[in-house]
Image (cartoon, rainbow, N blue to C red; front, side, top):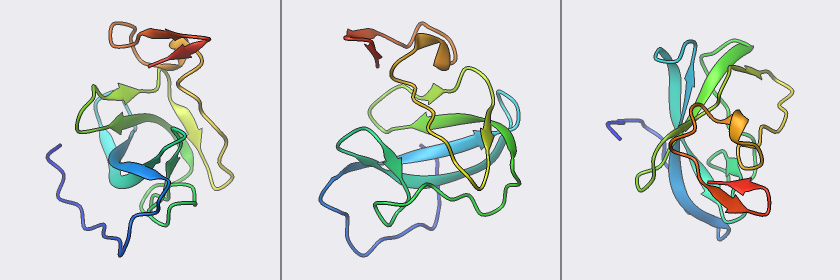
Length: 115
């Protein structure tokens, strides 16, 4: 993943399955900020306390592409920039193939879910 971040935790919560890397991009290719976070067993992403929304320290509110990087999977990026604000909203990439950038790396898993 070529990431040399400084994030650490004293313990990993029981409902966390893995680490992921989240990037915010101002354009499709320009990384504004990246940081490690947790992937929970229900598919949600959280900050390193295991419950909070992921916090980015050096960005301003605005529209960014969001990229999720996992060590064992293809990366996934939002199809369009999404608004990142201090009042976050859910952006679900699972339930609509048009929420994801490109279509070649997405598979219909059935029951309205994509992976």
